[in-house]
Image (cartoon, rainbow, N blue to C red; front, side):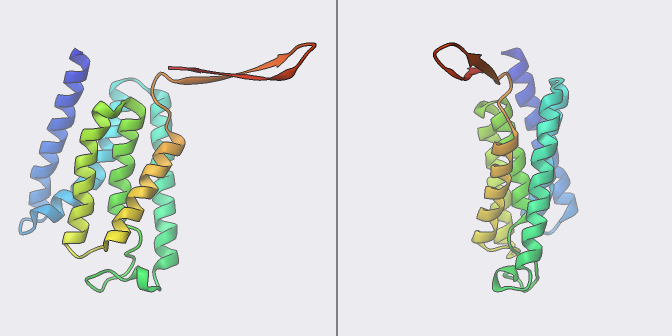
Length: 186
């Protein structure tokens, strides 16, 4: 229980410092600055948790999730750039999907999927804030942030297994049947 409380304090400290730093990035627009920072801070907290716990497998799964999220987001941005979906509400380009939101959601879902939703649920709040800030600043449409979050979540679900869960495949051959036995431990 003490380790869980320590981790919660570490996450809260990072979130608090990220908000303070975000205000200095955009002094006249604190919510934009916070969104900009949190899109980096959430994945960084996920990686930090793997390092804090000495979880090498988690670090590898984090990398697969983040790289997959970033690459697919950029491919889709390029594919939709010269369509109506590529136009931002403020007139800019590369609107669909939201890269900020895909990164934030990938980080939040990684935390929840790998270490449990007692960590992941609180991490979804700043991820939702990132989505809100992108729409509020007229940098994205709601469809962009929803798609971005879905991409980040999908890659985290695909690549990340809960800590302590293992799947063993055991081949079985007998005189009556041949097959495999799947044993899931958690």
